[in-house]
Length: 183
Image (cartoon, rainbow, N blue to C red; front, side, top):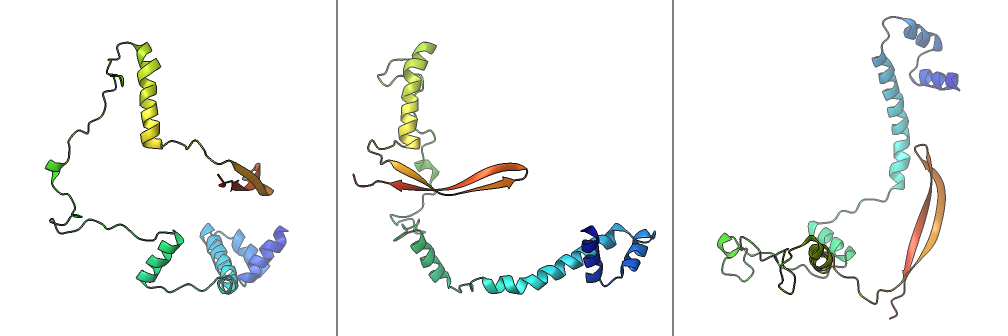
């Protein structure tokens, strides 16, 4: 197998086997010439395959900026964009550049005061009462709550293939979720 590969490499570089072995054995032959030989072989093989690969691709679309913007909006199902800040300071949509209008410290609740106004004085009170209050607020205000009537998702395996990632065997599964939105 190696002889065939080396012979093909030599043939593609237009050297005879004897010339290749003589050059390999001589002191003048260096690693750079091997690398250049590989680059030439790989380049010619890729160039030979390129016209077939290019002809299989769909032709690129030539769109104006407006057409491309509208196409992207349609793909994302966006009907209209909200208006950005206006350069006119008298406009209701003007940008705020006045830092005096911005509060330097937002009014955050005191972490050591319960919702009923009592102060947290012990670690037990913190872990039993105040911390769960903060977690609930964080869940509601930051993460968002899951609706009570969330529809069930039924997962279906479309395909499963056994393959290797590196030396590790894995099973890749494609799933599709079906949601019942009838309620």
